[in-house]
Length: 348
Image (cartoon, rainbow, N blue to C red; front, side, top):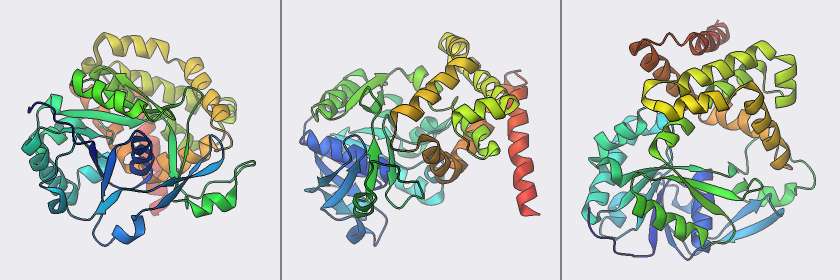
């Protein structure tokens, strides 16, 4: 990889909830942001845009960024990082594969670190294959805040301002620790450089996690959202009380994924730590901290709709990996069977 040469610039692939929320906070840290969007979508995303912040319930203006609709428009520009916000399912589409190939060419030209924000078992290996980049040049990243498009069908709870939300393009909410982003330490120097840069925003915090912990973060949580989907997305208090068998099944499936051989000792420890009680406590705590954003309504929109295919694909891969290594994964299999049965009933 080339020695780092700072250009104070970041290319973000995608101008959705992840792209705009991360881009805004990096811009607060004096980064020059360029968004790559779908063809003919430049006008829809051009600066300035308003973001609604649930933290202090106010509008934030995001301007002084560029929008392009083809990677050829930036092929000669030096970027410090390329952030890819495609979800796992879109990344594996024909268009996604072509885009990854183009990103790889651009990143190899300047030795630029790529941050992938999609989830799913095996997705990083997929990125490596189609970008032609080594493992340490691709760092996984994930939002620590919740962010959604302003037009998402979520209830507006007081004292949030419905009129200001309608004026915005993206809405976001930090939890009490103000964590806005988390980055993988596949390349310690690149991860630290990004972390230091992001944290200069003074409005949001970037934290770091090891590759194995990222494997766990990006795979083991999906059974809980799948169970909530099957139950009709009740609050977590009602989920635990009124759907105890389904909740128990989800937590067992979560542990089965954590204890897959590739997760090693960290996975064993995570499975023990994330029991039914602890998992319930974490989600119930989030429900309170995220107010006035409705946490479970957000999960319904995001995991029950927007990235549902990504979540399902990740669980199916986890099941296959477990069975190939001699783990029966009975809870995960039962959960996936319930999801398949519901889908068949809908199609009839």
